[in-house]
Length: 118
Image (tube, rainbow, N blue to C red; front, side, top):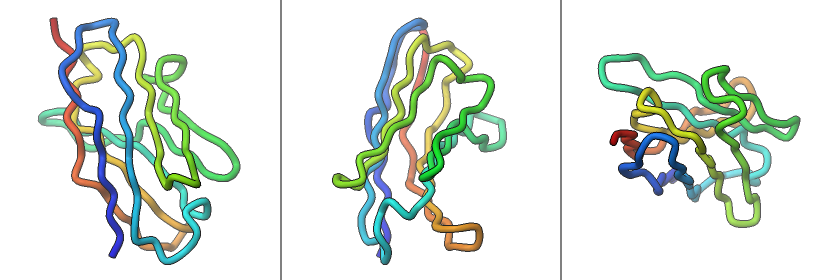
């Protein structure tokens, strides 16, 4: 059974930093073959893509480019999201997503709350 567990959320002041982690387990295939993504959902808004990392590289939403960095440690089956220069509009529940190939099953974590406020 696949599990994705996010951690690292919390309350931070504007301009601050946080690092989120997503630990994966239970995959049927090698972890490196899964595209991993971070999404977020702010109150009253739809879930949006923040960053994606595949074997080909990473992509970021325009709103977080140059502030957020996604990385992965395939040996630890963990992905990270380093978030710098945080803004109040970054406040959201952040979710980790895994998918293998274009038609593979999509797996979601339960999310971690990030609150940016003074």
